[in-house]
Length: 186
Image (cartoon, rainbow, N blue to C red; front, side, top):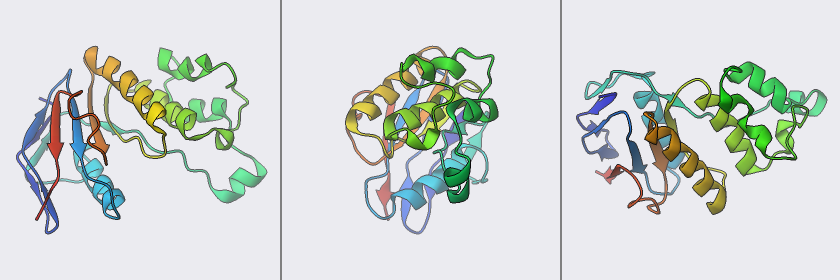
């Protein structure tokens, strides 16, 4: 068991109990709305072991697939390239570190800030998967096709012994996961 959640409760919501084991993907439906980001960040910190919650036991830390954010001055004067991003954020010995180059128009010299939502998200996903197979992720900023592609990649990783928690605002994947959990408003 990687994560044992005995039930998270705040003054605004509660998350029912669940366990996360290797080979499982949990979809945690947070509903869309102005609360989504704050709730997502709160839960991400708990499931990744950064914040301690008395009702959650994290036996093995997961890694959140961070969104790429570039400071404005850096973006204007010396934009980050895909190659530079991977050198800084990926294990270059992993096959996932070069997977983004399977998209024929992306090279080491491609500026990350020129990538649309889907390939940009795949870049950060591959960088994270190059280091670990236990992740917490979202599909924010992706179109439906890109979100589906990301989910399929994660399902393959999970099938091979990884684990994942998808923090999502939609219930589209309700029947395509190991466990489906809904946030409950208090």
